[in-house]
Amino acid sequence: MIIDGKKEAELLQQKIKQEISVLKKTKSKVPSLTVILIGEYTPSLIYVKNKEKQSKDVGIKSNIIKYPKDVSEQDILNKIKDLNKDDNVSGILVQLPLPDQIDKEKIINTISPSKDVDGFNPNNVGNLASGYKSIIPCTPLGCLLLIKKIEKNLTGMHAVIIGRSNLNGKPMAQLLLRENCTVTIVHSKSKQIKSHSEKADILITAVGVPNFVKKDWVKDNAIVIDVGINKLNGKIVGDVDFEEVKKKAKAITPVPGGVGPMTIACLLKNTLECFKALST
Ligand code: GUN
Image (cartoon, rainbow, N blue to C red; front, side):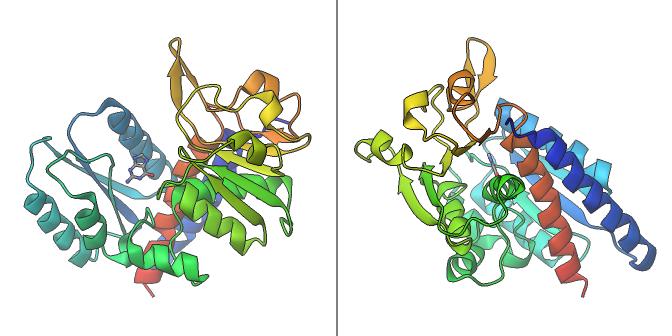
């Protein structure tokens, strides 16, 4: 089975849109997302444009603040502090990657945890790791929602995550632990990755290498979630050898049209959650 991430994202966005239209009847403010975009990195421009369009479609006010790539760190920190205080702003996202003169850690630490729609602030990361209420990073949340469309109860399943990033691998592990999975994380310095991946009931990959995961790396009937976005011969592909692995997997996400649309839908979900928390 091929998991239709686009369809699942549309369903989630419809729910969000419906909830916002009800909220608008009783609240004077609307959910709003401010994105800070620094420089002209093409993938970032595309992502941000997409986020803007999807936000508007569900009734979230979208505001993009653009800076040249030589902007000072202090200017960005000052802007974030202003946005933190602004009652009309529900969510703040600083698009990554950042230019070298700007310290990512400082930026992430300055975004108010209650407006941190990425869930990257250590306050949210710590709450997630402790099993407390937190804002959950959009990509792993999207992956989990897709996995749960296939299998409601993940208790006892062995999940193998390839990649240990703060954006995906680490929070993905926390989410799957919360679902009672046995979790293995492998990464670029791991030995014999195949010996782990071939045991996975759920295999999640975010490495950025086309065809990294081959058919013989995957157990029969595994759920395979491909977070990779790579260019190969002018085409966008994931990390998994899709044509071969789809013959073996119980369910697999395509690239494009798998995790990507769900990530954006989850960003909208997080923005709505921040709005609700701030307006109660
Ligand atoms: N750049 C690529 N993915 C992301 C993301 O999920 N959040 C932010 N802030 N930047 C990104």
